[in-house]
Length: 59
Image (cartoon, rainbow, N blue to C red):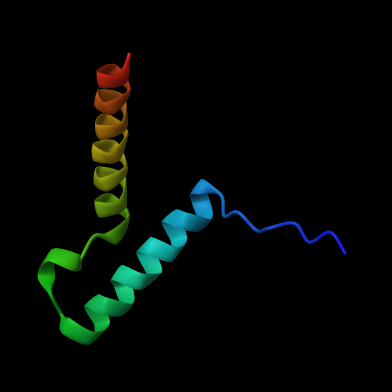
């Protein structure tokens, strides 16, 4: 049996992140967790920036 390993796409990862943050907010009422989707996109931008910098260091 050839089982293909599941790899989530970008939208699925975003939804998992958002749901997790929203669940944490519901438990803690931490105001810094209010805008999960915006936080995800800020993280993604920072991540992309780090990867770009690292790629430049190895060239």
